[in-house]
Image (cartoon, rainbow, N blue to C red; front, side, top):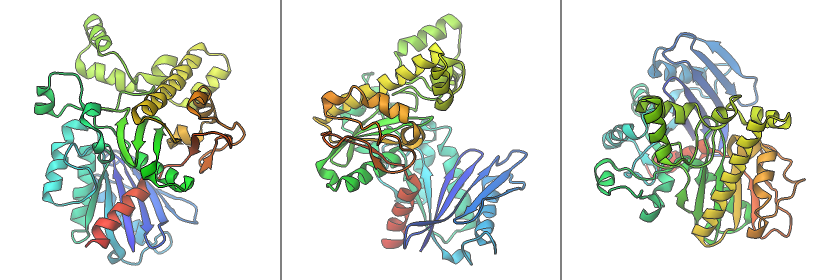
Amino acid sequence: MKVLVLNCGSSSLKYQLFDMTTEAVLAKGLVERIGIEGSRVRHEKTGLEPLKFDTPIPDHKVGIKVVLDTLLDGDQGVIKNLEELRAVGHRVVHGGEKFARSVVVNPEVLKVVEECCPLAPLHNPANLMGIKAMMEVLPNVPQVAVFDTAFHQTMPDYAYTYGLPYHYYEKHRVRRYGFHGTSHFYVAHRAAEMMGRPIEDLKIVTCHLGNGSSISAVKRGKSIDTSLGFGTVPGVLMGTRCGDIDPTVILYIMEHEEIDPKSMSHIIHKESGFKGITGISSDLRDVEEAAVQGNSKARLALDILFYGIRKHICAYAGAMGGIDAIVFTAGIGENSITVRKMVCEGLEFLGAKIDLEKNKVRSKEAFINVPDSRVSILVIPTNEELVIARDTKELAIDKA
């Protein structure tokens, strides 16, 4: 029972093939520079060294054909024929208010995903291209769309509504949507499993920390608030994004620097965060190294990050009326011993006490709290692809 998971970007395509009888990954890979000179493929069959090769890939349809041919390859492949593919799951960044769960793709779903393109102009058009290309190549195989925003559709109106004139919501659907929902869903449920408790009994703060970051309040298995909003800038400091900012600052800079909206958008999305403050790098590892060497701006960037994460954890504990667990995930959350240490030191008043020895862990599941900590502190590597595969199996195979 094989399910293919696709994550299509504007010029890239990530894939994983699962055997859903065991949920094992049979193969995974990346197609890069689609439509650009120097297109390349990286394919890894589980248990073998990665295969890398260059080949012209003018569009996503050709890219998908290359992926399927590689999966069928006598040496590197893992299937004998395309009939083994029972379904394909697609990551779709934005589902607006229409989708609170994953759905089997049909013409109406495609229409709604297209309507949501203005809400995620860098992602939804590429996601849509991938779905349409796969439908052309494998017209008889069911496709499932899994939305980053869906998990957060359980937020109450007072959490997602902005204090703007209400007609902007009615006309343009301006509201908090949140992102990384598939990741927050996975790690919250996995935390409950590791704790041996029903998720319906738990209040969990999930910290998805990477080059893009978001923090969510998950109460009884449902998202009730999250740090990203209408777009992907707010919340904590990120690699190139500024995080929470007073909107009047943006207006002030635009006026006094004579900056147009497109240029200002580039500044807050691509030139801010770690990169903007330090002038060194958008990579936290470089910032941590510079701070150790005495760079004051690197130290400041780290302090802003630690403070922001800690503040959101405390705010969400208040919003939920308590807290049972804190989960760290994604590139920084799973790997930065320093970030976890500095965030948790100062949360003892909440009942969260970190064990500095247990905290010396990277990219694997672990409890990192001391035995008498009332709040569990966990490191859980995220697995968004597995969530997509599970939803795809449930909707396209089990319920078919």
